[in-house]
Amino acid sequence: MSEQLEVTVRTQCFKCGGSGLIVNWLCHNGAATICNDCNGNGYTTLEYIPFTGIKETKGIKRVFYSNEFQHVYTGKHTLHNGKTLDFSQFGCTYEEWRNGIKPIPLPKRNQTGINNPKPCPKRGTTVVDPKEERLD
Ligand SMILES: [Zn+2]
Image 1 (spheres, rainbow, N blue to C red):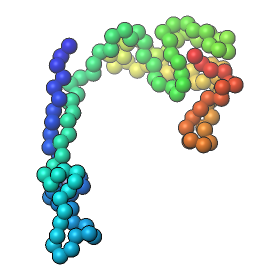
Image 2 (tube, rainbow, N blue to C red; image 1 turned 45 degrees about the vertical axis):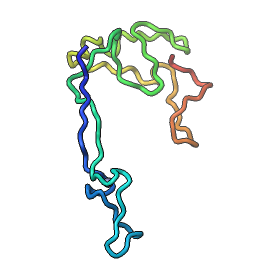
Image 3 (cartoon, protein in one colour; image 1 turned 180 degrees about the vertical axis):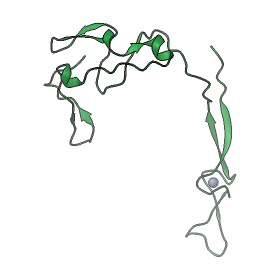
Image 4 (tube, rainbow, N blue to C red; image 1 turned 60 degrees about the vertical axis):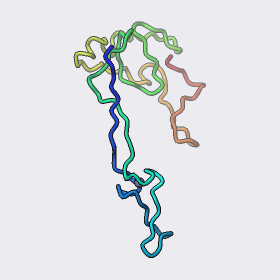
């Protein structure tokens, strides 16, 4: 495993524009206050790990596009609706994916016997009606 070196860089403070000072409606006749975001330094620090190439994930056999609430398997699996779906006919192997092959998309939910999730009116998120069949 290669060592991941974290890089720290100084970035110009967004709040004060690098001046270290804030001049606003509370400041009169040339008075200023010291920026609280950067303590008057004019910069903040950003720490990150540079991307050096995609990392290998151990134990992965097949790769699929992400479908919301879609469980994925590597071979045949019986769904809650009693239908069997052979997941090995979709997606691609991890090796293929590592070599740039694009996965074969899974069938749409309504093609596998599951209704499309409905948007939740309260939270604006998508929920699956528990009375409807689930694909898992
Ligand atoms: Zn600042």
